[in-house]
Image (cartoon, rainbow, N blue to C red):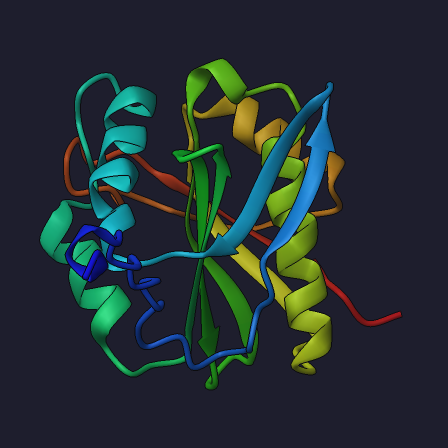
Length: 185
């Protein structure tokens, strides 16, 4: 009789096209805040774009369709988000590259209010653990030459400069600093 008043159970949205590794949700603490690291879902896309806009002064290098394509295409990808409660505060996009072979950090962004609080370090250390788990010998990334804070972080975490790619970024023709960390002994 009262069945019509029962709340419908909300279906848990499943991540899509996560073929790289079965990544479990985990909780961790930074400066007294409990954060969650989990697989990204399509419903996270507006938050991913908003993080980039906050990081890049209103500009999002990857727009919604880019993220949608990445999250729904069967490839060796792993997209992780960090959230506090239900707000996404950071993300990392990992791509397994067979020809090199390495695990490439294709995208990494942390909301400015969370920068400097070790969220980025946590994501990079997670990427190292994923690379190790799937047997890849190195981790790679590119960063804008002007992104001195990120370059310093990567250096502290063991990356070294491998190359400078001139005019890499489409929006302003800025050079990219290509960095690598060898994970083998």
